[in-house]
Image (cartoon, rainbow, N blue to C red; front, side, top):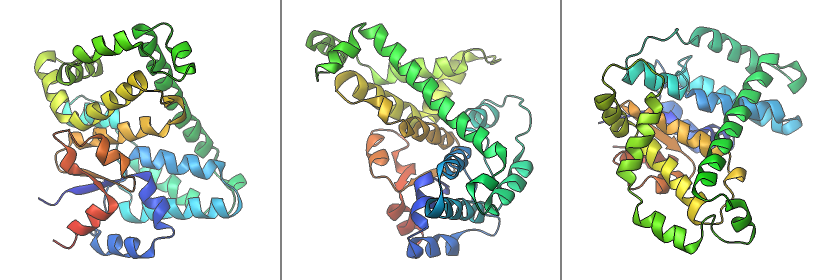
Amino acid sequence: MRYTPIFDTCVFIDAVDDAIAWTKLCAARPRHGWPLSWVTCQQLLHGLSKADGRGFLDSREALNKACELCKGKILDPPICFVRRRILQLSLAPFPSKKIRDFLRGVCASETRLALDPLVNEIARSCETQCESHIRSMRWNLETLNPKWEETRAHGRSTLTEDQITEAKRSWDKQALKGVLAEAFLEGLDVSDRVSSSACLARRLDAALEFEIRRFEDATFSTSKFERARGEFLDGMQLHYLAWDSFCFVTSEKRLPNAVQNSSQSNRVLNIDQYLATLND
């Protein structure tokens, strides 16, 4: 089966200097284009809002390339995408046409000062989402171990050795995925929560696997998740795999490795793997 690719932000950033890969993508692109992830769109606009000089020109070129591949097709934000397409909930239409026209204007801007003010609003929204996720992660760690920050400051895991042993003994990924799926449904008007939760746990397997992996790293190691804000957005990208015909394509090798135990791992590819499929 030939999957529809959803491209990570880094693919377009790298394409600015990788003419060979870009030429292959353009040659394979269907006439109607490939849909652009709203998360990727957000991140490209965020980068543009912070850049000057040569950096601005490169960021604008990356955004131009994203617009060229998508032909105006932009996906809902991941959570809305799942609610609308998987849970079949009634939501207000996503303003794809307005966003397409807005991006056309942004791509024509000559300097950062000439950008539409909405670019900065979207950039701030992206930062706010990451901050909210960090607060959530901190709250979860606080629940496990109120002294986690003090513990990590001494170069140790956020848990004591006894706590790690106990946590690993009770660590049931499938059960955790079910809990996370149920949390996704909280506050939604879903008639059959049991079957919907089971459906979500299956459909969001890669996203949930990645979230649990990040929490494991923050819990069992000395990794500072606050510095890896982009990882939250990576996890959001994986929500698009709830649609069975999508695959996610990234330039990062770390992300496919992080979800290698997921039932959807075959649909998380680095760019070289995806380009190789174009020759099949």
